Image (tube, rainbow, N blue to C red; front, side, top):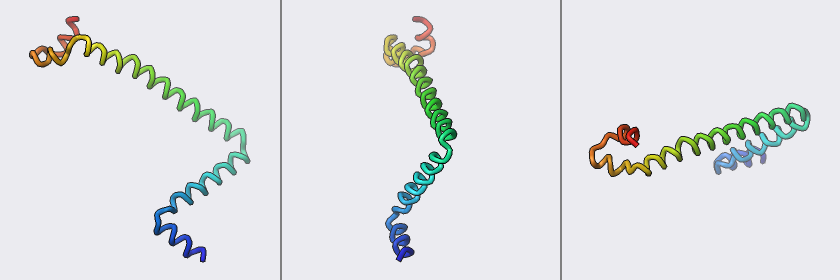
Length: 93
């Protein structure tokens, strides 16, 4: 009976859900056994995600947005249509 249930789950493509649930259960069991390691791993992940988010926010705010504003302010599409080199147009202003 169990083998038939497993085969039907595999046929429906839901085996990955069962495997993910088993992995989560095993992970939670290990975290309860070694709470110090679990706290260190969680803190490391949190700091890594926070640092990545902060760096991306700075890069986005400083480089991408300011560059887009500078291009929009100097009318780059109009100058490109007039045959002006964009790098020269940006240096001139």
